[in-house]
Image (cartoon, rainbow, N blue to C red; front, side, top):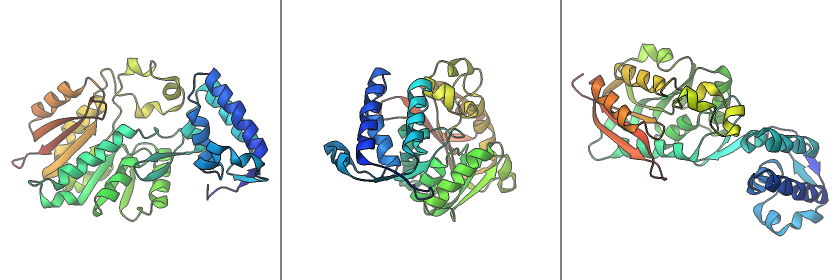
Length: 307
């Protein structure tokens, strides 16, 4: 909210809007919790004031947008399935508040595990010392979430974040600036490794949450996703593995021997991803990890020292 000119509404106006919004949410099978989450983001309220409804008597409450605009956006949430994160313009992820727009996927909590797996790979007893430093790539950075997570977890590393979308890169750069990590992250527009061609063989690691939804499945996703999130970041081709295949095939040219390769994938893809990594011939110590729901969602592999 700091970059926006503050508007204001009376506590009574906001209380009345909240009552209507909660009723609308329940009628539209949307979680009423979204209303309070949104109010915490766009109005200068705290959880206690919301829970006790003590704000009802406040003469004025600063907001980051006029109440009329908030109401119009909320109606789009109910009628057009506009994600509440896009209404607020932010979403929490790890210890960050990330700016988001419909130019980027909304970062999911599951993806936070990629950072935890990276830290584990970089710090285990047999890990090469360079894994905690050197150059790391976040390919398909979107909002910049993974790049920020890497920079925060690996303060000695330099992060190179790539995205095909200039609009996504603008969001990612804003998030890096807001987090005070822009000195540690370099941004590039292009496809996967292409902008980093001059650095072949120099990377300690690569982390990616690539498009992995089969084309025929995209249209069956939640309306919030299908109607509003960028399909470029969702559609992984006929079997969902087009981008993952490319990352498997090309990454050994860019990673140092002993470097680590980490991706997120869809439920049901783990076996074939493991086979593709084995068939490529450059990887060793291939691992599949589950998310918190027990779904095999992450693949980790190391580049063999012999290549």
